[in-house]
Image (cartoon, rainbow, N blue to C red; front, side, top):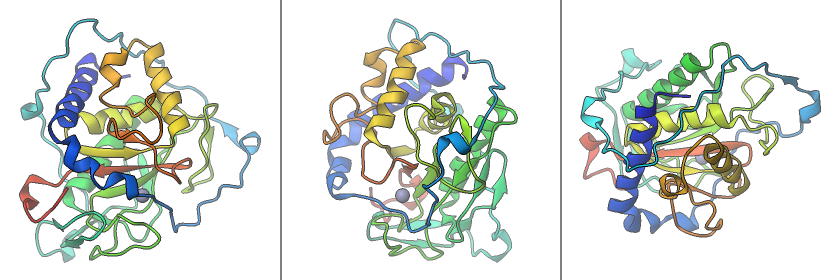
Length: 287
Ligand SMILES: [Zn+2]
């Protein structure tokens, strides 16, 4: 899928993140549930959908059996976001408060179409860093899977942040809902329920791995059974349990506060990524 360096960086980043800040970030997780107000079609049967031909040769490298190297995040420079409202902005974005009670100033509105993604949502506002991460990770997927369908990016935050019912979070520009990459072609700009049979674990991991490697990813909310599919897929291509355990809640159980990839109800047709506070917004941005 990716050069081994990325895989190692991703896992090593998560080990470091999980080790350093899991207790405080766990505090709010159990009461978070998510639902989407974008009426995303869940009534299309897989059998009615066109299969996606495999374009890319799966070539996940075998993970090393030895220890993981520390990530070289200092080498990484995230490309600038492409904001559809760039001309109207007052300056860089600021994420204030918590994801469940915060706000967003001078947001970046994600361009509706970019390399590897389409955005469905008029409330497509977020921090500069969130948009940059989404666009970069989508671009990584597009580069590695030429011709594959774009990621479908759904709800981000409202223009000023704040309450975004029925979401409990999505208030401060650090949350994003993304449709699962599937092995069948979904209707344009819609989320479809993912299953163990139609989840494209390779493309999903490519996206997550890109995000993880930056060290900016705080949480991913993903249906527990889909976690199992992804986890097993990674084991099958050579990852070790020791590498994956800091990343995944699976197989500890859907209620166990472990790992950065967590179960939350309502995440069978999309996954939810939450990025950490941009360094520039601390301490007003609260994790
Ligand atoms: Zn969400």
